[in-house]
Length: 190
Image: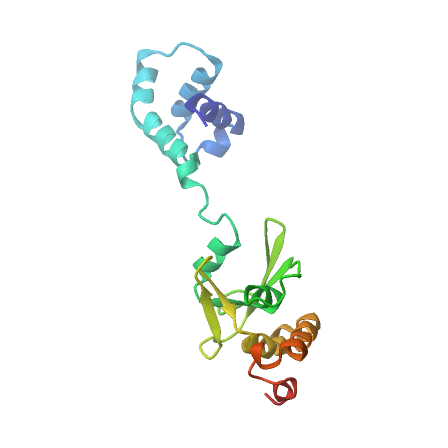
């Protein structure tokens, strides 16, 4: 946003809204600039002084270099720190679910409960007390933490996702010990 666009936007907002930033006389200077009216010498001094500094600050805050650092869900998860992805997305990451189209990503974490949407994918955040005993691994390609196959089935008790439980069981019946060291009957006991 150029200075003229910024000034026009400030004038559109009105004197009352921008009063915390610009004093009445400063606002009048911006209004004159916006309408292309010639400034007096005193008004030009305002523009060279604090008004210019405030405009520069607003311009910096509005520029590309200060865009939010959260562009997708991986940035968001890295801010959370104590988390790991479980469910179908973790199955897919572990190489068992390449045929799945995952729109809801289940994330166990120690801070947030709820849902957030990023680029058509919904992060279902499930808050737990601790993830210290959880079994997860860091994926080197995207730097995200994913549950192991054994942890995914344990997590179904928390997530209550029956689809994940069914897919996990089907994969176990097909791949046996290559898929998980747990057997389905052992899972029910834990």
